[in-house]
Length: 246
Image (cartoon, one colour):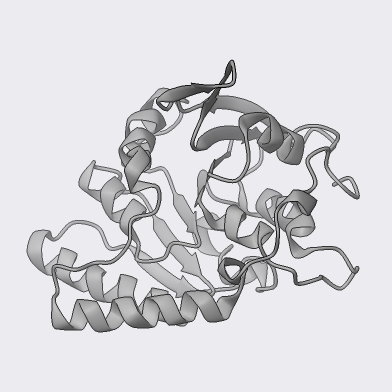
């Protein structure tokens, strides 16, 4: 990855949303709420844009190689597991793993998983505490997924990472190492990475994951959201792009 992609996150001020403490506290509250009211499963990110349903409609259209019965799914920063549960209900029954660095979020997702399984059965969904940027890759690349996952999903996690002021061992903001980690998780020669963001435009996401990065990823599709016009320019409140690994 280049030292700084064309759209460097300098215009995004670090915030508490980029800290583990924030997410631990949020999911601690959501665990308590769920214990008091099992129907309260917590926040669904980008729900106001209907992002999850858009993703469910989009997935079957992007590659004839994706079979709901066998496609493996990895959800990065899974939170309460909402996206994976939605995919399960739509018939995506292949291996599925949700990872998050907040143990509280994984506890909540596992509780919801127990309830989902008790109510309707179906294939299990695994959830695991794991740090996307620092965790041992072998923890999520093993067995049939040793060579990578068919579809890697990110709904808001890249946004949160870009709001962190942490630095990596090379002195870079930690978001600078994100793409290299993603490339290691996506199956080569056809695996897909789908990222949904409210902080980056489609052009900026292309700059992060395609332009000047050695051709590991190529753009493979996009999700259309309701557009707005402001000052003569047309835009969307969120962006979802799909990239294919070569």
